[in-house]
Image 1 (cartoon, rainbow, N blue to C red):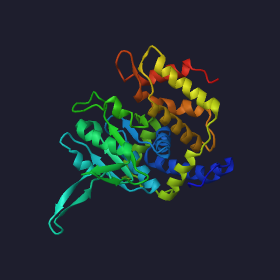
Image 2 (tube, rainbow, N blue to C red):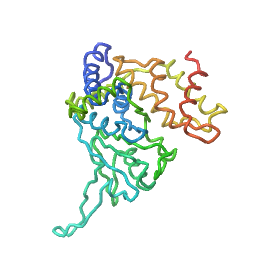
Image 3 (cartoon, helix red, strand yellow):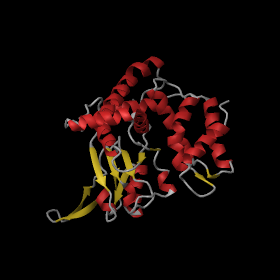
Image 4 (tube, helix red, strand yellow):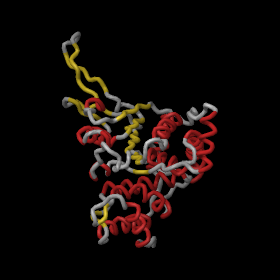
Length: 319
């Protein structure tokens, strides 16, 4: 809705929020006990970002991606990354057509609306870089010709912890391309019991109904862009960012891209809550998932990003 200039609180509550709640409930029927992670994934999509899920194998990363694609009516492709995969396996390539005596472009699996990049840290840095450049530019350039990706292009990349053998850790510059990084973790006791009971009855792979069209999703993304942000809220955001750049415990702080990502995620979070304006609690809710993979401590480790975020929230006053 490019003509939107200002949306009333009523239109936010009635138009967008009901569809989002229905979508989260539908995905929650397939991914049991992970309501917070489902909301984070949807928040990331509405903010036009990309999502990195880091967790052990078998935690439901692929199930979450499938369920989101089904609920939102998105075309879906999955790439299982391996150490021998080449950039052309992801992006596509130009091949010679004998009939026309010319080269023609054959699109790779990246040309889809929702891409699951499974175990992205098992492929080489060269192939990782090819995917991440496509994520950033939302187009693929082969032989000097640019091929645009779909408007709703959304990547859910998964990676196993760095301690797993045979991995190529994503460098800091590549991690910054992901708006959020989340973990799914082990299911709760009740959710796991329900999963076991469903599995015993042969119903462990539950189909997810479509809850909105692609056009509705694009409309909601446009509405997120028009969520209002006050000057005091921007002051609070800048104080958080400045602290990450100047505090002694931080090797480096949030980049300008990270700052913009934090603001856009907060607007998306407010929209999901049915509000047309951002409040400090929105920033505080998304900060751990937007900032932790972008921060490093002075001892040179990235693993304590969550503790650095907690330090930011404790040290910086809202007012």
